[in-house]
Image (cartoon, rainbow, N blue to C red; front, side, top):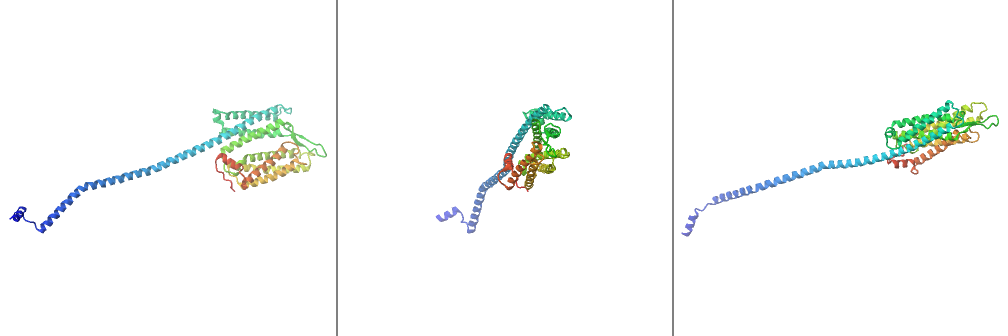
Length: 398
């Protein structure tokens, strides 16, 4: 009765198929409940992961975008520093050039004053047309060099208008032209201003030669002409901005050799016309030596002009410069020996004498310097010039 009552209270016992279906439904319900509970969590995890990845991607993109800007900023900083250093070097070099030109302008003013004084106090000044021209030239040179010196002092309106401009170049060119026209008149022995003819009066020929008669006028006139030429050379070199040539350190020497060659040519032509052209003026051997001096002066003038020009432009060649220096040293060795010894036309102290020996010493100075650079012995002027300017100089351009 107890068992039956229990069964009856519990109800009929389910069959095996009913129990299996029920357990299947229960498990399915439990799984659905778990899925519903876990779905929001999974969605949160997926969303969070996606947001994290997006944030990381955005951060990476921002970093990548910031890297070029940072690099550009660094490059700009380096560029600004390089520009500042380059500008400082250029400013220092320009200041040094201006200072040297100031000194040369001041010397030109001094020499012009002394030349004018020496000419006006000379007893050979007969107020002829030649003497008036010399007075005018010295006066103009004194006035222009004084104004140029004042322009280089301080930072006035005249300085900004004159220093380093085309006006300064024109002024230097005018002064070079004035003294180029005045010096032949001053140094002409037939005028008796700075030089005069003297003779030995022995034998059949008088053996006339030029010698200095007014030392003050002689040396101050040459000082004025050389200073004017140096100022013009400085201006041309600064305006052209040439650099990198082998002969850049010796440009001034080539200009001086050109000047010495010009004087040799002028004096040889004058001696040929005024002494060799008259009967009994001098011996034939003296005229022959004078002809060799004339040929040497012409060759020296052409060679030194070309080398100095290409050197100023920075387009000279190491081999050509060395060969040219050797040729000029040989030619002027013979020239100085033939013109100033024994029966030469320049045994007395004067333009002919000084120019022959100047060509000898300058040509050997140039040849020794360029040969040392060409063979790579020592630093030389080119290395020192490169160290001062801070630029790389190509030495072996052949």
